[in-house]
Image (cartoon, rainbow, N blue to C red; front, side):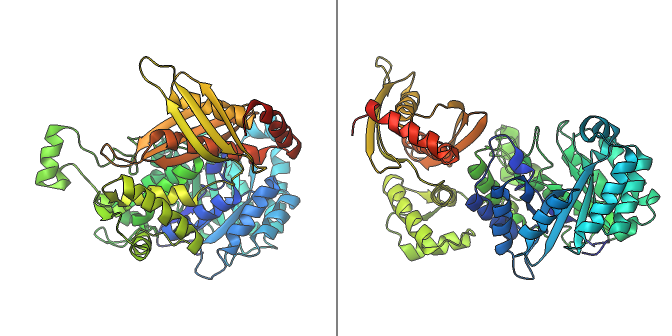
Length: 538
């Protein structure tokens, strides 16, 4: 990539930094699904993972690379500490990709040097220089990050950046690792690097930042004005602690206000050329996909992709929008892929019409996945008079993003009321193929269902989150349930959709239990099943 691109490069780290959100862990197939969506979205670089961290991470990066083997595919990036084994593992995982990048890093702030690395500045300079040069033996595209750059002494930062570029780094990333900076400070920092690192024109300047003070997006936009040409971000802003800079917010800010930013990229102020390569019409769908897979719901008032982002409750606002949408809307909802809430299919619609509409929405399913989704669609269409595009997306996402199935819900039945004790009966098919039934009393019908399931599965866990969201309006709306469980300090999420909220809640719980069960050592899984059987009836 040229050190002076005429647009802003979007580096998506949803699959690496975003997945470090507590409870957001994805399996290999789910990561590949997200990577395909990011490709359709038009991101320039996908940071696919940290191959040295675990065999699962290595496999995921490798599988993602296999889907990016064409010359026009996005660059696939793998993270590596400034250590030979990390770099070698990253290079090996990246081999199937047409466009490969290694991203190596080492901490540079005195806080990290003293308390984490236990090394001197001189030692860190030497390590950075040596490892960047070593990584260039494997790839031509190399990114270097001085971790905690925003709390690093500027003179030391300038020196290590200069040495990294001389050693072969083609991108220099400036991470605000702890979300510490103010926008003006961050802009001045990028400008200082451009002015004080003599070879800075030989590398793209990138920024990475966390949202601890709610300023990540503002910091990045200020960095663009001062010469940053790559933005490292995540879908929905997910990530460690308060998350990362949100891709959708950055992209739409640059899209809506491109006349403001054009001069900073040397363009005429009135130029209509996009400032990024992102297909904005894919934003909403990608947001929903990541939310469903990670189990991290998008807050209703979230900018760009929140449920209320294009809603108007105030009478004054409604009156203005009805007269002219631009009175209270600065962007068109359709520009991010939101479609009108209209009926597109019904219970008499055939498989071909169903497939065609899904393709129009951007879903290209395998024959097996299409058949499963179509059966789900027909079942919903028999209960729901109007099927909208939002309903279709929910049905498809719920069907194709299932975890490995160890337990299968065969039956759920509840009894409840204001003068009754909520009772649930459930039947689960176990990994051994047996059908086990149990019943429980709870504080409500969902609590009763979950207690009964836990007696069958017999793996201790704690329900830490339960949320319900209506996909569309109306009494027959599809309800989406997302839950999160904790077991041995690990968090597992589950997601399901149905017109019956009890069924959706039951399937979401089974999904989470399946993820939990898949993570158990074989001995513990076998022991759980052996001790569960006497408590249930076959």
